[in-house]
Amino acid sequence: MELRHLRYFAAVVQWKGYREASRHLYITQPSISQAVSDLESELGIKLFLREGKVARLTPEGEAFYEEAIKTLAQAARSIATAQRAAKGEFGRLGIGFMGFSSSPFLPELLRKYKARHPGVSLRLVEDVPHGQDIAFDRGEIDIAFTRPPSPDRSSSYQSQLLFKEPLVVALPKSRDVTTKRVRIADLAGERFVVFQRTSSPEVFDTIVRVCNDNGFSPRLHHELNNMNSVLATVEAGEGVAIVPATASNLRPENISFHRLQPDEVRIDFVAAWQKKQLSVALRSFLELLEEESPSIRAIMKFT
Image (cartoon, rainbow, N blue to C red):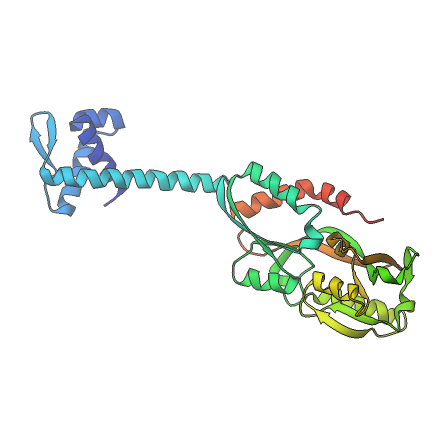
């Protein structure tokens, strides 16, 4: 049974005969007759009683007509749904993000996307880079605002560089440091609070390398999984932390941030997505992201 059989059958009912159905459908009358005959053979019932030029439904035909109309209506909705999905009018898009790094630009980006694609349902997942890898594997997110993919995953991802940020040192305000810059070598005797390596390998390795390049290995006192926790631990006097500059977006009350000297290292922040067939929702999001990239770079410019 094909949809055209149901359409021809329904047209015969609507126009009360084969001739009128043929005229309105622009289909030859023998084709419609054959389609209805095939339908009757497949069902094993008679759908019409022929009374001259008028085709009247049998009781079985009336019952079948009610269901045929429902099926045709559902088919029409399915076609419309597929066409709207192809235009990106609705769908689902999972977005992973690191809150403190994304907060200056992500809300406006999401507002613009929803204005263009109000039918797309957004799922937002805030997590560290390692957690976003897990979310990708589970199919929970389609794109992430994060650090560059690790070497073992980079071949499976595409990414777009959004900005580069410097490292800063977070110190308790109680230390009353008045200089804008702090020499990295002067931190050699400090206890360090760090973002644990499993959460963000690139950041962890970069911090250790920066210390090594300045003559010492950092004394790791606390290794934590959350930037809020890192800063709270520094605030409690449990050590100092070298962190990406966007950590200052968390605005802790009793922490001061100072640029480092030397100040040569930059940490990349990217949008990353898996190398596979992109959904229409993701393609449209990437188009908007490309448009907004200059604005994001301007917002995230570090002096």
